[in-house]
Amino acid sequence: MSAIINWVKNLIFIILFTALLEMFLPESNMGKYVRIVMGFFIISILLQPITAIFRQDYNQLQYIVPEGIISANWQDIQERGKRMEEANQTVLMNYYQEEIGKRVRKIVSLYFADYQQDIKISLDEDYRIESLQVVLTETGIRPVEIKAVEIGREAVEERVEVSKDNRINKERLEYSLSQFLQISADKVQVVFTTGGK
Image 1: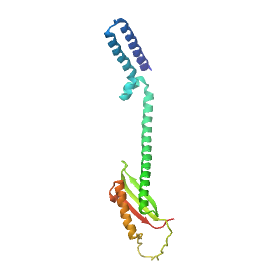
Image 2: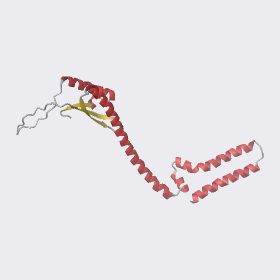
Image 3: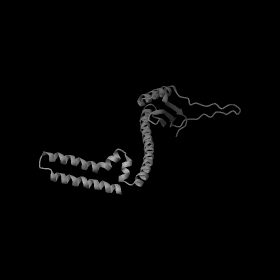
């Protein structure tokens, strides 16, 4: 509190000193210059607390604002800032993934309009695409062939048979997506699955 009182005292002293100096100076060009210089002194005293904040000179600031207020609030402000930054980054990442997903869906619909699309996008910290996977599932009902299972043999993974036309369209789609998103072709993968609604 004493720092604020000292600051006000200095301000009043400069203003009174300026008024006295003007009274004793004769009416000449010199009076204009003295008023300008004294005006700068008054402005500098008025701006002293604000300049301490901009220079982040918290040692001077503690003489104007009590220390308990600065230290407690500053740590709280820093913690809130970090939490807000993390939350904003997550929201921005999700929004960016959704926007990329919308554009990818439009391109995929040009090649495979009758397929259900599941798009998985992985981004790095700088929002660059690390990988893009498009899983296509036929939406129509199709007959399912049931094969006999023999016990005692190792399980063999079944792959979905892709027709020649779909294989060509798959390659074209992967190329189109890599060109549109400006990423390498090895980061784009189109996969066909069986089943559907």
